[in-house]
Length: 273
Ligand code: NAP
Image (tube, rainbow, N blue to C red; front, side):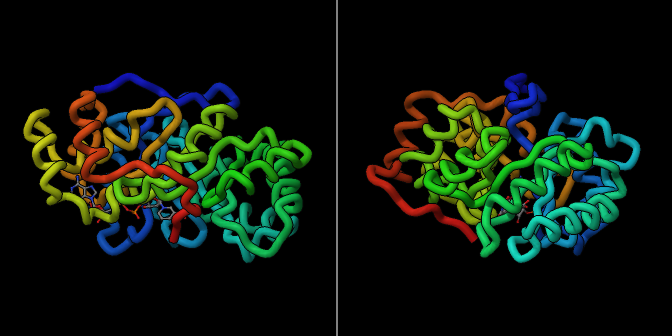
């Protein structure tokens, strides 16, 4: 399988294909097996959040292989005051059954000043409770604000919506993030599974002896700074997704994709949930 890695600010390297967990829990034991299979295949980034109710499930999935996993969790904006962020992190650690979170994010912008949240994140990092911190659902102007804060340049990632139908970030956020060496984490890369029967994707998939899902994932990972985090609830889906690391899209494929799903030609406000 593909060997390309994404390097974080602190030098840690991860596979550009990770695993989401939003809406897991309904088929708990199958989902835990799926996450474990993913870790075995090298998909070590596992994305959760206090909001998802999946931190315990993630904790169970990584039991016995905690050192291999790269756990991402998130504080809800309503909890993101200085004190609230610290308390939320402690709760997440308890639910995850671990003593550190690899990457802790602010889930989206709320009413607390960024400076408060970042101060708490930096302290949590100094205490060893989180290894790195970052943001989610922030556009360029807000990321600039983060970087202007004390320690702001330590921001390690920005997790945003990115798939074939939502390409707005390519106009400015992707190049900005590359310039600042801040990896983008692409969420909902499969458009929640809705694009699988698209004619263009089926044609490209046939040429690669691949599936449309693998084409979509390979496409989100085609640049050097993007980690993509599909949620897959079965071993079969995880294995299929893992093979997207072997798909190398050609210029012709990319042209066909651009014709069917045009790239942005002007600023588009950040899309999200
Ligand atoms: P997604 O990953 O784009 O799509 C998930 C859907 O695709 C599920 O229905 C899944 O079905 C299906 N799927 C996965 N692999 C498949 C395969 N090989 N073949 C067929 N179907 C497949 O959507 P998402 O869950 O919204 O986004 C991914 C992750 O991003 C989330 O789980 C979450 O961790 C994160 N996220 C973050 C934010 C944020 O605000 N930061 C917002 C949304 C999501 P099965 O479950 O049956 O495999």
